[in-house]
Image 1 (cartoon, helix red, strand yellow):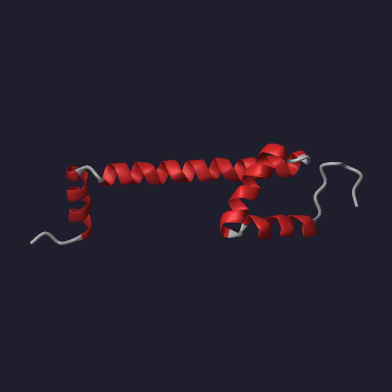
Image 2 (cartoon, one colour; image 1 turned 120 degrees about the horizontal axis):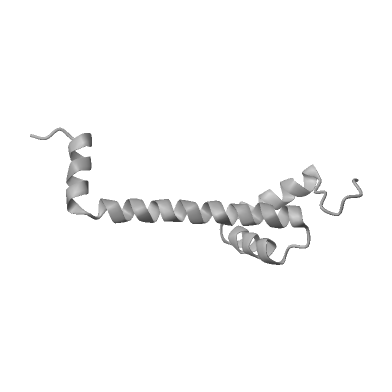
Length: 84
């Protein structure tokens, strides 16, 4: 094992990713590790996961907001369906 205190082994990464993949417990653990993690490498990794989740939620929210506007919705439907 490396002497660096921020070193994370492959097996440790695999275990962390397995836990993070669990539906509800995973998100709770990601938040906990991002805030209270002792290892800076893991802490930054889980902060990056939360940042990407925020970007994804913002993109989905923008999509939903734009699709709610009737003019845009009608235009998109015109692209995907033949107008008769």
